[in-house]
Amino acid sequence: MIAFKRNEHPSNPSFPEPPSRRRWIRILLIAAVAIAALAVAATIGTKQYINTHTYSYYKVLLDGQAVGTVEDPAQVDELVTSETAKLEKAYPNLEMKLHVGAISFEEVREYKGEPQTQAALDKLASTFTSTAVGTEVIVGGKVIGVVKNEATAQAVLKQLQDKYAPPSRMKSAQPQVTTLSTAPKAASAPVNRISGVKFAEKVEISPAETDPAEVLGQDQLLRLLSGGMETDTKYTVQAGDCVGCIASKFDISPEVIYKNNPAVQDDLIKAGDVLDLTVKKPAISVVTTESQSEVITTEPQVIIQNKATLKKGESKVIQEGQAGSKRLTYAVVKQNGYKMSEELVSIDVLAKSVPKIIVRGTKVVGEGSGTFSYPVSGARITSTYGTRWGRLHKGIDLVGSSTIKAADEGVVEFAGTKSGYGNVVIVNHRNGYKTLYGHLRSISVSAGETLERGEKLGIMGNTGRSTGTHLHFEISKNGALQNPLKYL
Image (cartoon, rainbow, N blue to C red; front, side, top):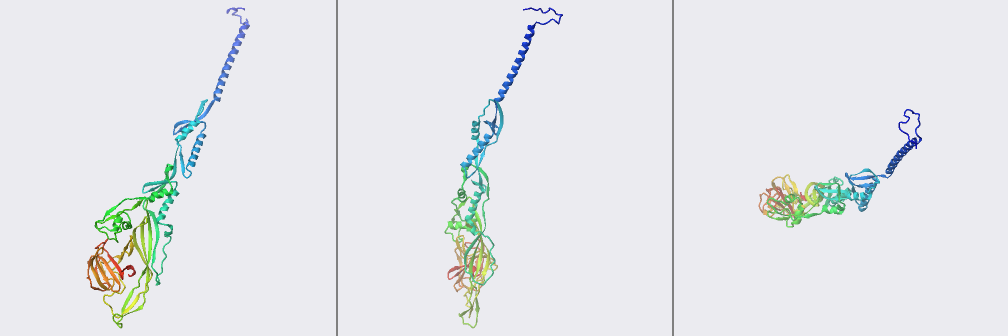
């Protein structure tokens, strides 16, 4: 090999370099370029490989907390749909609601990443809860129960009202006006029409969610509302008490008192009596307003005319009488079928009675005419004759002028005190009729005294078993009690 010194021919640029050196430089340059190219190619290949094996999946968050990963959010939607279908199949008669919480997703990209889809779905499903969507019934602020829908609740409430107010008895129209007639009408059975029905308590229905096992059937709700517990209740009568007063105090019907205490007759109770007031109180009470009417026969008035040409004791009918009729209408309020109050609201004359006219030769002192007038002036009826609160009220109660007068001519049979009546006068009219005047403050006549119609016999009072100042007035015929309104 030829050796070249570094400083040889320094000033001669045209002196050629040895060929072997140039070749090595070229080789080195080519090698460097090749290495760089290989490095670039390797880097690009690595990135392409990583990109090819990097996968996207989704982190599932429940109320902000991670519960797992899934390949696709649609898989969670499918889970919710599937769980909802299971609920519908398990409870086909209920509206079910699936509670899934607040679900969100975050996309994740990871080299050779693999989502744990099934584990995430299983964990997510374990957090789901469900409720039945129904309607709750609230009475007086207390939740009674939940049924499947509002229609069921309304059906039960209607069923309760229909028990005491059947549609066939609902008042659909006002009564027709009756033209006065002289044609007699026979007494008829009472006619009841219900003009209103409501619940005594405040009743609310509203949407509610609950465990499906807690949803009641229609019959179950009906039993809860209509059932009740009986609490043994006893009450000792105080001075001044009356049946109606006690019933009002305990918010029960007077009928309950009469039913539970058979010894109580009419309104005759005394201080110290112990009454059984036990009654079943259901969760809900139905109040009905009823219009009750009955037609009664009114006896014809008997007119006596004196005729001097007839001998004493002789009589002659110159006109036969004809009975008439009246319709008595009452406003009645009932609670759960028990009568709470009753008021006489109208008396309508349906057929006028035709008087019976008799002429007699001489007026017989002390013998009544069979015709009666009101025993008080300005009379107002406060209680009528008939069965009230399950017991017979033997006469009528009147208020008005304090002076009590004989309703017809007759002879005083009794003047004194009787149990329940207090101060009482009984007049025998000597024609089969007798009249009784009870609860008098004072008596102005004595037994055996003859009275003319309208003659004073006492002063209105509040003696005996009385609930206030009034006159208790009775009429009997041949020993049988009569409805005084048939004669007045």
